[in-house]
Length: 235
Length: 82
Image 1 (spheres, helix red, strand yellow):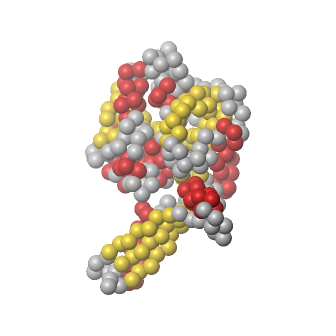
Image 2 (cartoon, chains in turn purple, green):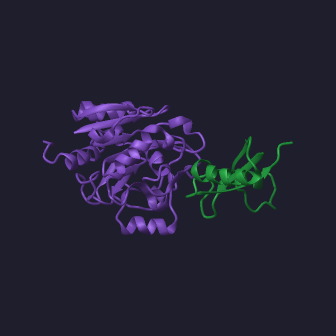
Image 3 (cartoon, chains in turn purple, yellow):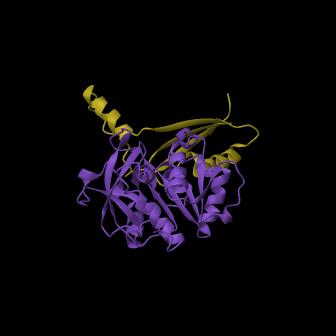
């Protein structure tokens, strides 16, 4: 199983993603520089990490969508390749049209950096198959433009196609406005595309996946992807 | 040609910055203001294109890059350079 971590100018969670894939899970992992004209056909998983690609100029993810690597990532995703976008990576995925909706400024107008609870809404995706149905994970968020927006028709499509993977919730799994940190429509924290091979989420699973840290909830997302790509590999 | 482009949130998308500024205006006593839309303004200097060509090109630019049409709408004017 070969993983690629894309590095844009301004990416700052790329090291964490690389570390978890390579050192914690022992996977063959390579860096992919945004200008590289790289052939992605040999990869099984591409990760778009968090950060501030191109300084978030114009809108978060707006410039990154036109980088040479993103043209390749779109082809890779459209041919069924697995793509995970975390935080800024999620913003790049919606800007590039691989995922529906948009991410706008948090309603509080503040940068929010804290651990939040998210409820697993769909365990039949390659990104969540190791989670228990309706279980609650505690994962850090760190963003200023993380409020997920989609119009009513789009939201109904997401619900009908079971594309919502994570919703912000209380620690008991209560999905209410009280536990919505940023004003996201329907408490949405993470979604997949219709084919379920592309996921974007605002929480950072790579920040809670190293055994040096007591919280390992993020490992479930990495384990799900590994299990889907190489069944039986996990002990 | 000079293209003047205005980008604002669509109706139904909450504009947190506009809302915050509106609160501040109310605190200052400007109660006649019923709404504020904050957005982006871009001014493009374009060479060697007619007004008609500029309109087509600027529309493309807005659709592709300047606006995210999921959440934003755009409008623009094209004027000759002074």
